[in-house]
Length: 125
Image (cartoon, rainbow, N blue to C red; front, side, top):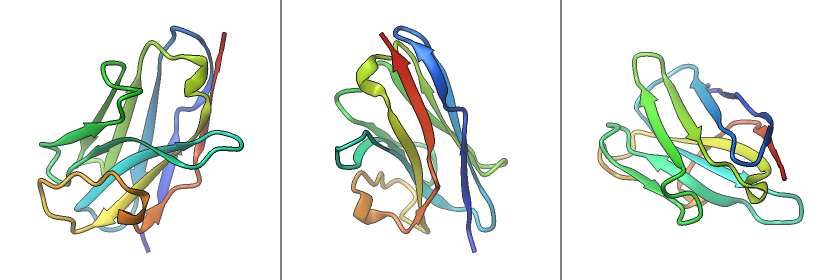
């Protein structure tokens, strides 16, 4: 059974940076995504990367500030978050979809079948 474990969240001032990690145990070959959920709001797409690592997609709200990458040798994906804003405050979850096509990027939470527990990111103004 695949497990996803996020790390790297915390408290940071506006304009600061954080790097989130998501380590997947068990099988590899997953398309991966990051989603976030703020209190009282629905879960929203943040970023996604194809199984091959050759394609990525970002929400408009984070383009130019966040970068998603993966290290398949370590079964780990990363989300580098720069120029953080208070509106980025949320619980960030990583998600995985086994054996998605190699170049396909999945941006809907319905596309994923494995979820991590989440890591809290808080950006103070």
